[in-house]
Length: 329
Image 1 (cartoon, one colour):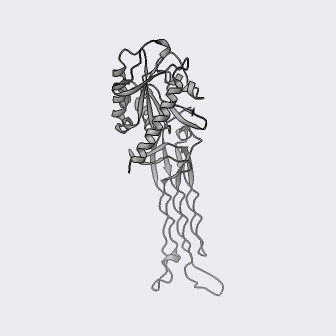
Image 2 (cartoon, one colour):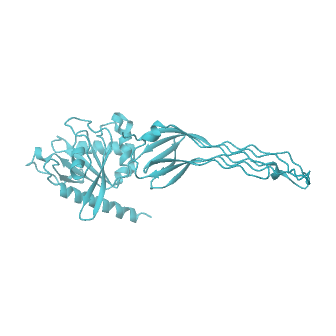
């Protein structure tokens, strides 16, 4: 099951209390204070795991607690600190706190502190001074942080497929990669994003993401479009898929662009082209070189027509994106 949103509560461990104790031995009746400090409470961390592709674990396990630190003991013994808790999440997870961005997990093995454990309290040995040789002061441990966090998954892909429902995105990714999305001849067949690895040449490959179809108003959540749109924010290039039978492809292209801009204007700055799909339905129709100033190619995923050119164009978009990022300071 693909789950790309979750809300969890993280409760770090409380620090152990300091100890009040005095050294007592047979021949040292007044040995002075020897109360040890309490141990620190356990903290909670997120850890990126490239082997995970969904937030399902955090969706069904909503509360994470770290153990508290042990109390200090006599003979200047410090209490044992509580063990840290590590929550594995997919690479591409965004962590939000109080509706603001806390941080993002973008690398495998990356750790992010979610909640810091409480500090252990000082024992009475810490309060000894020239004027106070037998202190009875000690400190309780402080509470660990407690937060309610919202997790959002943004897929990490190189090329994103964008289009209206039933534009042929799922069919395309199933043909050019080993991905097996649900395919049917009706709108909104795809309800979750799909990833596929596309081979280019002898030794190269890139990741393609097929997101569910967009409709007008998607940026406001219509048809869950706002959730789908975030999955193309980290792509390096975009393919706008439009059916060749569309009576007004220019308007369709502008509708798609507008939804993306309203969701995140920066996404439209990525290199992109228009792909006219289902060429097998109108094999003799003339294909324009550009639509609204954007380069156009035509394909048929059913009979594999134009797919090699599409893969080559997608690879070119990646090269353009790389050059653009290198030019930026």
